Image (cartoon, rainbow, N blue to C red; front, side, top):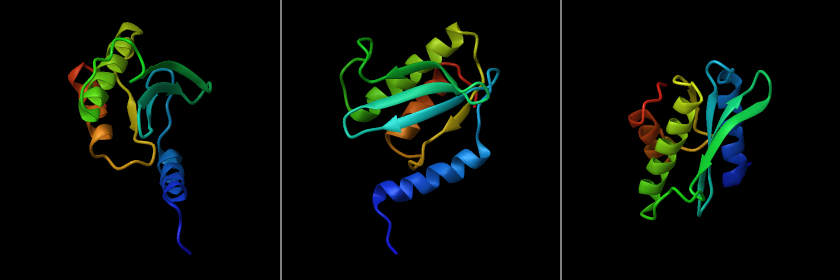
Length: 116
């Protein structure tokens, strides 16, 4: 049985989510990557709420390559988190490989001061 790309990613995502969850003190940084945009949100899984979010669609994000934009989104989500009093998180790559835009977003968030 061969899986489609989205089914394969969904399986990986569920496998990751079995071990990773977020709380109010240490929320989960969830990443979604579409062909055009990249989105990141901090989620408190205990209460089932999104604390804050950032994406490449926001006005503050400058134009550039996809990897540069992802790094800017990581920096923006980190700045918002630090302003909200959150400095440590757990990273949820959402079933994507830790490579390219996902890695760039994570490194941008780390450079801006988030710990994970």
